[in-house]
Amino acid sequence: MTIQTIGVLLGGLVFLVLGAESLVRGASRIAAMLGISPLIIGLTIVAYGTSAPELFVSLQSSLNGNANIALGNVVGSNIFNVLCVLGISALIAPLMVSQQIIRLDVPIMVGVSLLLLGLGLDGELNQAEGVFLFMGGVGYTLFLLWQSLKESDREVQEEYAQEYSFRSDRPLNSWLMNLVFLALGLVMLALGSDWLVGSSTAIARSFGVSDLVIGLTIVAVGTSLPELATSVMASLKGERDIAVGNVVGSNIFNILAVLGVAAIASPKGGITILPSALWMDIPVVILVAVACMPIFLTGNVINRWEGGIFVGYYGLYTVHLILKAMDHQALPIFNGIMAWGIIPLTGLLFGFNVWREFRNGRLNLGTKP
Image (cartoon, rainbow, N blue to C red):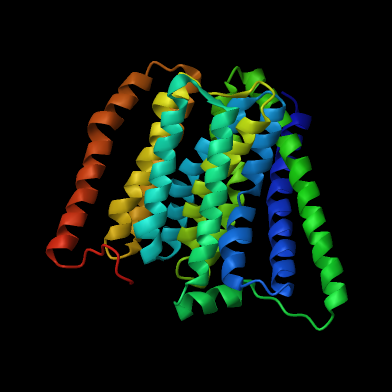
């Protein structure tokens, strides 16, 4: 590993973040000038635009034969999105959770996470399964659009309109400028993904760390920076559901569309799923998705202390990955403490909170906040 490799890695991360921002800005303003609803722009272009780095990196990794980086990128990003993005956003200000997210989107997130585990039981995500996942992503997007057409909540409509609508007195200049933003975003995403995949692979080999671990850590965090920036800014602005909806929507998109495209594009006919990912990392994705339910149900709010627990758990998960990469003798002890101490205690804490809210008549099972 050289200084140049680290520089390429950092450059790739910067290009991914700036490319996603440029892509979202150009595409959302072009959509607004075409008369597309700001709500639809927010639900599709913005939500999926923040997942563009995951898509480009996983596709690049798959085409280069580094399928473990593609898988680790998606799995690690989904873990980071829930534990860190939601956690940090909630630490800034408690996050409101809408009825649709509780009753529909989180169950879908849990369902597609379980689906990934089921499809990977044979140790591979083949091209046919990739097509199946991708079509599921298309179906989910169409469903979101159909739902948005029925949206009657004026507060949500006005919020999205304020955030994503765009007007200009110089339409020709605006078209040209936003087309440049769109093209520049695509170029930066392509270059950034290429640099990130190449440099992270070189770093993994120089340290003797597996591609999967690099995908779960450096690559996953890097490609999740747009989600972090979007959700933190939404939290700072006090926007009601955008912070939570961005994370949940991105996680669903990552599994269905990103992994689907990566499996379809793989020159080896699919993505190999290592046993360590199948029995550790993917179950963690399921666990953090399931953990959202008791938190979201209690008052339709993610409180600061719950955000703190999320961030703390990401720290513990990172410690596990480091100990595992080092093959450290403390790993069995650490895993035992987690499995028989910290996780059960956290489950009891969340369970008690749900029971207390239910007893006091404050448990929300689907009514609007």
